[in-house]
Image (cartoon, rainbow, N blue to C red; front, side, top):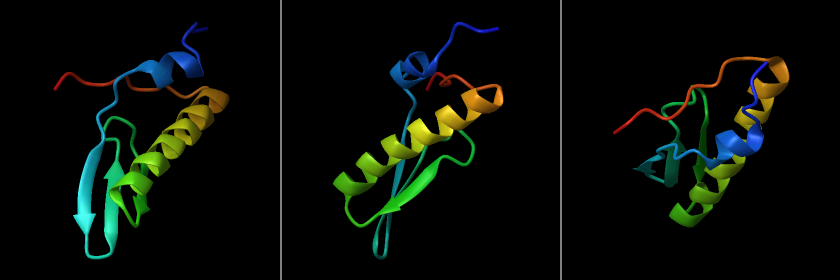
Length: 73
């Protein structure tokens, strides 16, 4: 059993990749497979990716799945 909880993972410096699209912005966290979102503005997508990260991490913890930690850049 790991003592790494949601607060621990939320405190880690996961890198966010931002990509402009024709209609807004796409964001993803490369270290968290499938953790991605889309927003109409840069500000919106940065808020949404934090929500996506919270949801992704919560689901993995609930399912007892391994969570990768950020890779050094």
